[in-house]
Length: 239
View 1: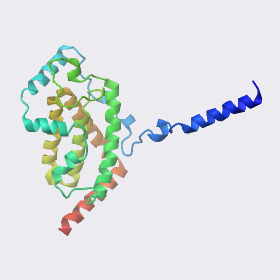
View 2 (view 1 turned 180 degrees about the horizontal axis):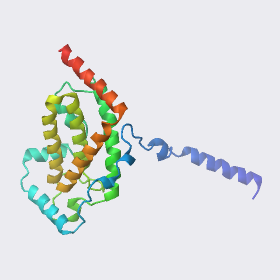
View 3 (view 1 turned 120 degrees about the vertical axis):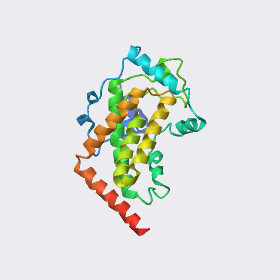
View 4 (view 1 turned 120 degrees about the horizontal axis):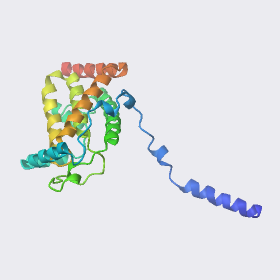
């Protein structure tokens, strides 16, 4: 091969490589935890879910089918709205004034916790790798749009909503009961939607409490929580 041909090939390869979009590693860098290192909360801290097609799993299927027989129109609308979990599903309980514009410190705190919670939950889901009820049994109806093949146990919606409920309750203690009711409603809608077993909800709540426990041992979280609490008090006093 001549030197000119080699140079031409190298030039073509250079152009092709530079014409490609940046790799996923650069476009979507691996998320980094802020307060809670997922490695400190291994998935084995949760009890194992029932094995598929075991008697315990079949009992869970029956519980899902029974729950789906008593779904109101308002529940159906809620579960569709909640298909994609987001902070506002919880913060709305505190009223229209609890917004990013008026509570920047609170939402900065919640965003960091949200990211950590997602990392820990995904770790546990991938470890246990259970299929969702509607994929296991034909009698379970899928009542929301088809979702990806992410594993069922533990429930991410349940874990995230409960973690946020507890943190918002630390900022506004008088609303903790209402926040927990909302978190439980979001969780149960996932059973009614056919995408979670009741045991997935149990796992999600247990994981949420593990995350809260880890957060309460983190000095950076406690400092940011104090800032969010002070922000809330300042707004209350200014009314």
